[in-house]
Length: 96
Image: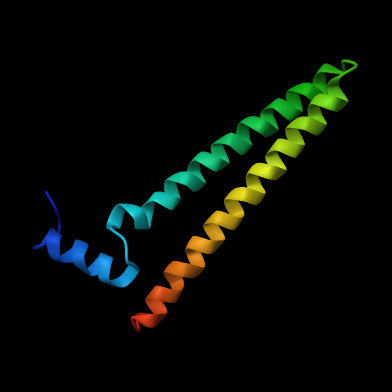
């Protein structure tokens, strides 16, 4: 059960403020959480490769680090764009 008297009115307010529905407003938080999970696994794999001391460990570490850097870059750009867009809409609405 919703804590709001009129959930449809809340959804409409969100759409007016942001131009998208409430799910689209919070979806980036899920993507950020997923990105951190991926980065966590990459760092664990880098640590594991560093501890193995095999001939190709340096190559594996470099490849994993490169993948992590690419992942962080792409998601930073995407999240940064959405943040600026949503912040701008809140300012336009006079909420900030």
